[in-house]
Image 1 (tube, rainbow, N blue to C red):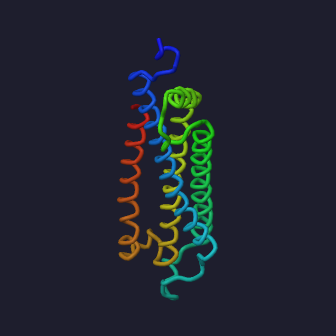
Image 2 (cartoon, rainbow, N blue to C red):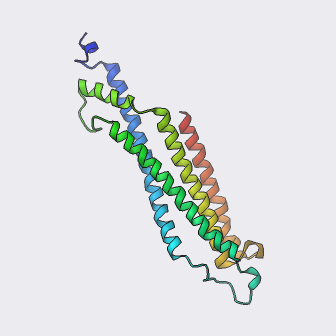
Amino acid sequence: MLSFLGLVSSPEMSNVSRRKMTTTRIHIMALDGIVNVNSLFTLALFLGITTTSTTNTLIDADDTDCAAGTSISEGLIAFHVYSFSSFLFSSLIALALKNVINFSKEVDDGDVLGANNNNSWVHSVAKINTVVLRLGTLVSAFGSVFGCGFLVVALVDLVQIKLGTIACGSPHTFAAVAPLLVLVPSALLIYVFLVLYAFTR
């Protein structure tokens, strides 16, 4: 009877509370990770946009066939901006979700949970729409994926400006571009697979 009235917490209520609190804490940690990584990429891209020169090149002056055209230079700036926008979009979505979680909580994770706190915590967690939370996290993660994709294209353009176009067949260009086109897409595929796997759990 006391348990029913909320004066004494039942083991089932305590387990549900701990499980919901742990799930919320995991969501916050995941969102923090997205924001921290995106912040590093955003800072690097901002510095890259402001300091990158499309006129400095390592190509010989006589080797005009390997020099990158204006379209590649324009693509370098454009894809830098696309990548910057994607990372910023992802960070803003993640921060918004984190604020929703924090504003919905009525007790701190480190508090000693009594009977009333258990009920209060369950009520505050129940106000968070799990579907919206998962979709928001998924959108934020895919924003990071698009940011990485645009960044790879921008770096390929940068390599072509500095070392010569891919069509020219320079071994230095292929040596610089190959890791970008193999390692980064492979990592992104693994990342997308794990995000989708976690989304369905």
